[in-house]
Length: 478
Image 1 (cartoon, rainbow, N blue to C red):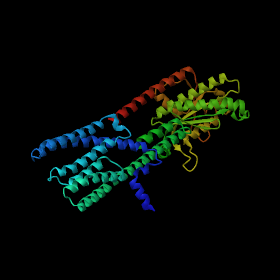
Image 2 (cartoon, rainbow, N blue to C red):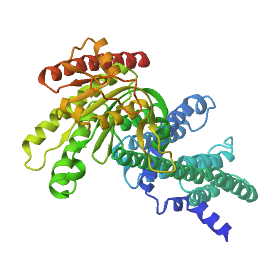
Image 3 (cartoon, one colour):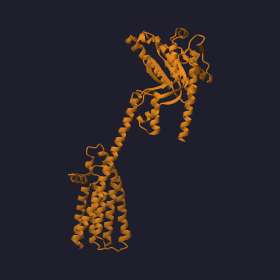
Image 4 (spheres, rainbow, N blue to C red):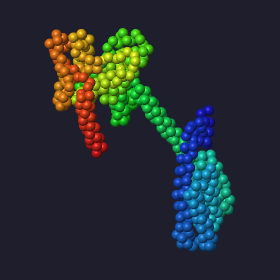
């Protein structure tokens, strides 16, 4: 029964649009095309009719010339009137095809009529007029056949009266109808292509919306720096969010500055979930993580531990950002402790610099784990153990920053002279487990002077970064 469906589709091609949300869009598109075709066709027809009189009727001495003149002028006027109609807003009305249908029928009718005026008019032109005008009015295949049949039926009496055999008229009519059937089959192809195009656009739109939704969901679970890199990578390389995530989070070796800070006495304090954990720890941890991200750090929270790494291409920028984030966390912690009546939160901030492997170290077959592995990370873990030693603890106050020698050297090369104390571990009889070669650490107090110096240094470096990025954008756009 498939042939029945094919026949119905051919006769009523708009059935392909049933249940689709684009029917009105197709109708608007068809109307626009129809109006444009009519404007060109009827303006051209007017020119041909009046030109035909001066360049054919007069030279051929057709008689009576007054009748030919009246005919050509009448058809020119009708063509101009129809052309004018399709320049007005009425051309967008529901019955916009009626003027064109009537005028095209008039063309066919009068063409057959003039064969009785002059025997030099080829009778086949009448059928040619039917084929051309039927194509112009862009009806459905069924309606095109109906219009052509009606037009031919009004022509036959004139043509038969001139002596054209009925058999010839029937043959010409059948050929004309078959030709129209073939020509109007393109109407079905146009609708099918339109539907496929709209389905493709809808599918692409859905993919884009899913990508946006997926991106929004990912953004809620990953650090802001990583989310920004994903967005940039998607735009620059035209990848999906998942493809970009694989590339952006691919483990790589780079220079980093690491920040490490856990809460002293957390184990005992956590026994009081409501007051200590809910009202003190959770808000403080959230605020500290926000500070890390404010300075382009990539935080990772494990229990009461805040760990973050900074992996800009410049190790100097990484170090300054880590120090500024560290001193901001220290001062933030101090301010929050001053406003709560529950247990105070005590923490040190430890900072180191060096090479590490960073990225998604959890793989794709398990949960994503964006972190850093390497000596700078292990070093801070061991220094944290050392701060619990009684000798070391006496030298530190809550909120102090403890930095390694490499970090201190980087700060010195930047010309930033911080108010800091050198801690000679050997003179204290202390060693860092797994790092016995390290004999010196530095303590930085979060006082106003150090805060101001680090902020100034950060703004200088940050300003240089923005200027460099702007110059690179100009170079790429050029």
